[in-house]
Length: 190
Image 1 (cartoon, rainbow, N blue to C red):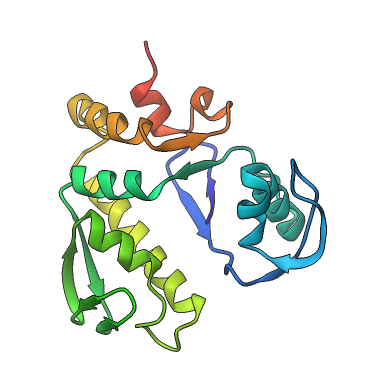
Image 2 (cartoon, helix red, strand yellow; image 1 turned 180 degrees about the horizontal axis):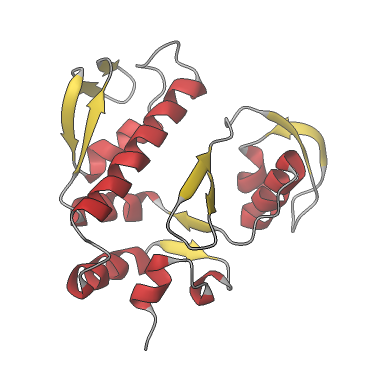
């Protein structure tokens, strides 16, 4: 996902790039350039630097910072928040992952949330676009929970969330100094 924060840091726009999008992959680190490769190969072949360069080349926008979270950290963040409520427009029945959720409201714990944002075979045509819809639906619900439950307005809650995130989130070196990054403000020494 590519997230753009406005100058005040109070609004974000999100664009997802389907993992199977065929793109020219630039040389970065150990990753050799590829005439054309699937977008998801950029990170697996050349790490964050190659993924960032690929997004920049594809979109024409400069990526100032990046953050990545591992699967364990994703689960831990969701669990620390007490689960995330999502409203599903249709049921999910995925034999491959074992995820079964009825249409309507569902509260997802960390493990269920991870399966939910990764599943693609039990939804729609099994392609990546329906998975992207679920990922964006989930991220919207997660953001709303953080705002509605004052996770960033309460020093105690902010510290608890930052404590979980700092164990599993990797960023570039400049992001911690950004004034537009709420977690960096919450976890930086004063």
